Length: 180
Image (cartoon, rainbow, N blue to C red; front, side):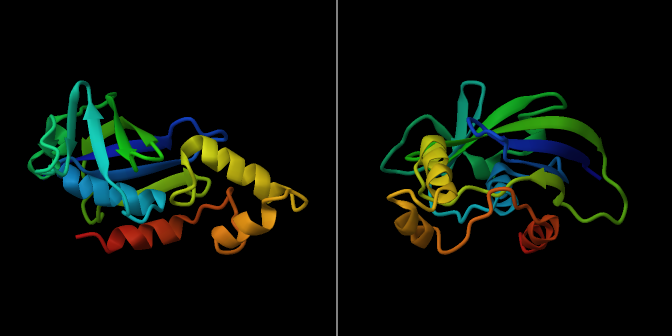
C-alpha cells in the first residue's frame, strides 16, 4: 500500500489566507492532483494550469505550444516531492492564481480511509475570472461598500451574495468523492 501525503494548499498573495489541508495517496498522478486541487479549492477547471517543481513544469502538453512542459499524466506525486517539500500549482495563467503546495507529512495510509480527503480549510475560493489577487482585493472592497459606484454591477457579476469567509468541509469532501 502506498503512503499518504498530507498537503497544505494556500493561495499566494491573498490576505487573509485562503487554504486547505488534504490527505491523498502518494502515488497520485499530477493530472489527478490537478482535479483534486480544483475540487478542494472550489475552482471550475475553466483555465490552463501547471505545476512548477524547481525548474521543471508539468501540465497538459499542447502541440501548439511545445514548451518545456512535461506531461502531468506520467508523473506521480511521490516521485517529485517528499515530506517538507514545497512546489507551486498555478491555475489560470491570465489571472495568475498561484497555490503553494506544502507536503506537511508522509505516513502510511489508514486502513478503511478513502483518499483524497479534506481535513480543514479557511475562506472561500475567489470567483473565477476576477483578475487574480489584485482583482479579488478590488472585488471584496467593492462588495463591502454598498455605496461604491461598482457595487451593483459586481454583486450581479458574482451572482448574488459572496461570503469570502465561508468554507464548508462537507461540500469539499463531497466534491472529492466524485473524483475518479
